[in-house]
Image 1 (cartoon, rainbow, N blue to C red):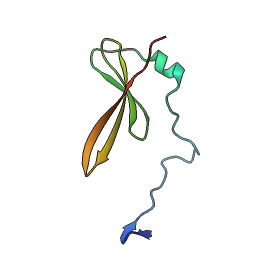
Image 2 (image 1 turned 90 degrees about the horizontal axis):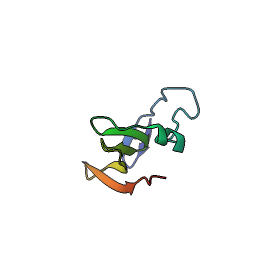
Image 3 (image 1 turned 135 degrees about the horizontal axis):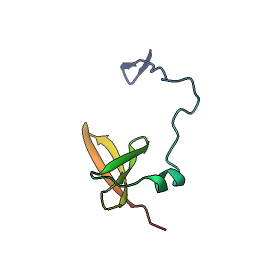
Image 4 (image 1 turned 135 degrees about the vertical axis):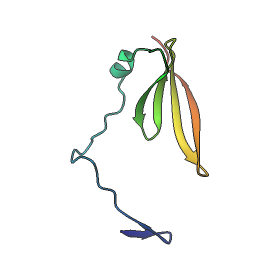
Length: 81
């Protein structure tokens, strides 16, 4: 346990022993994502995700908290090639 800013913090144990258990989205993985009947989220890291709409649009979004409230920031679209 550590004390920081007058608060006590407990260490969080990792779920795996793998040094890098999370693999961010790659270009190949993004191209393989297909739209469904409902919008689909493909998580990247730390609140960043790609939203795939039913008509095939791919939107980068960032989910975060500010002042205790959840916010959603749209960062733009993924360009089709």
